[in-house]
Length: 248
Image (cartoon, rainbow, N blue to C red; front, side, top):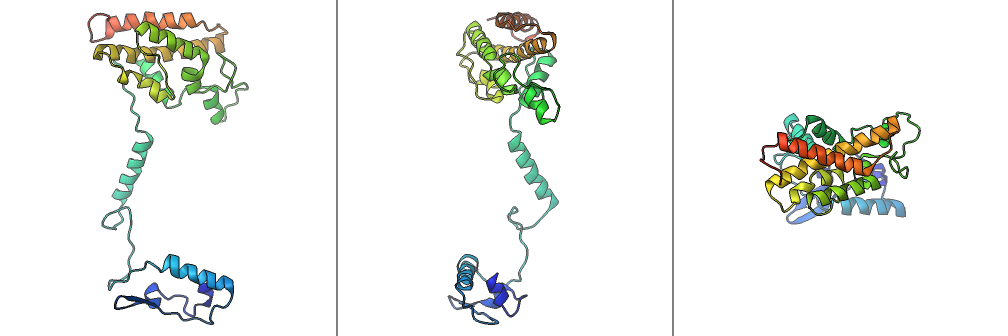
């Protein structure tokens, strides 16, 4: 700002002050008075080094360039392309629909992954006054989707029981995306992957059902009952709705 204050022609352009003589860059200044204070000299040196140091002049006229386009041209289409690309990065997880379980389980898993189920944390974020927002199953931390289906000790025991029943490695996840995509990394047949895919969703739906029964009907959560429910529904639906023949 000190350099601007000392400049005699406030509307000059860079080309008026930077000129080329052969391979040399010459700076021409038109001061109202020479900068004398240390602050003015520091400001001037910063201007020369950081702003004008890499200036390259050409014979063409100055023009605006939009750096997001290789040609430097601005267009609404290009803006839309950038916005869609950013949106795709934010929502790059795509839930695989399991065809042999009812739509209600698929929809629940979809809403669960997007944090659209009415947990204590989700309601609080939406300014819904609910009083106690602790997890009703463990009463230890604030109730969130990740806590209910991954972090809660009830969920942990359920996943251990499901893993043993399915004869697969322990189901362990850091996020709901990991949990819903767990089946993809299993070294089993496609039939068994399809089975585990649906069973995980059924278990999530059963956990949520048990949570609601406790919260709204004061029915105690019984882990054995949740696991048995997952086994019964999984066996029934897979046997009658799956494209695969037989249970294996």
